[in-house]
Length: 342
Image 1 (cartoon, rainbow, N blue to C red):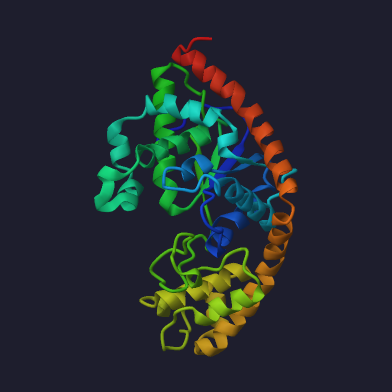
Image 2 (cartoon, helix red, strand yellow):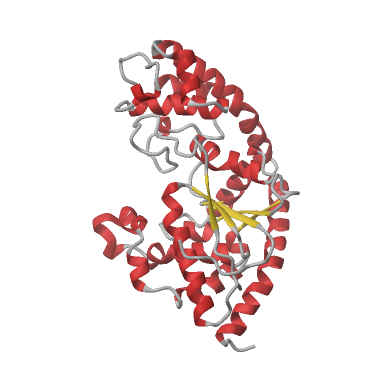
């Protein structure tokens, strides 16, 4: 990573999710559980619904505000406390877009061409992709730097984008002779539950965009739906092994064992000590019971919040005000440094 210049500002944590589709078990175990724990640090926490990123792909404008509310409700249902953490919509803070343009003029085309997710998202159809898909890692850098965030909870697939944010910040500070203006944000790699795979294909991540709803457990699912999806989850005919090494080459078995461990707060070794040698006819009901017990409070609170959109809107409004107050002096300083009028 780029070496960090001296920075003596406060610690601030920032992360966000796109308001596209229902948040699911992978989002919960891979991010939200971690976000809740991070509230215990001596740091400000900013968690946004990144609706500006969402429009890089075709979307329904009429549905987007409701999707933002849904994401905010899921954050709160999982335990993100709006009294301790700012919860807001990215688009409600104009400084994100303002800084993104400045940073696009700092970033280099070669840096962007090395971003692997653009290739993954566009495939052979890249000529028809929006420019926004190509440049969205710069917007992500702006999301981070506009608050001078020091730490960003990320999965392995986002580490490249965080490195880009560090490179852009370092280049800006060199170009405009302001060493120490920005911290170079550090990744907070999420824990063992960070990579939850599809219930229908253990080689693919659980995804909001999967055409099969049976491939994921949504945070809005009730007990019956959770139990049904686990019952129908793809497995293989062999019993569970007695060691973690025995899960190699068995992606579906490894995924279900990993989900159990993450929900229980234990390890795969611990789960196999309990269930090794037994078939899925025993393991799946136990996993279903654990998942229902763990997620029922979350889905219940999510349903309550979605039934009171005014409460969600109050949280989003207050969070946006807090975010704008932090971003305002940063973007004002950036404008002066690059020579903008006024």
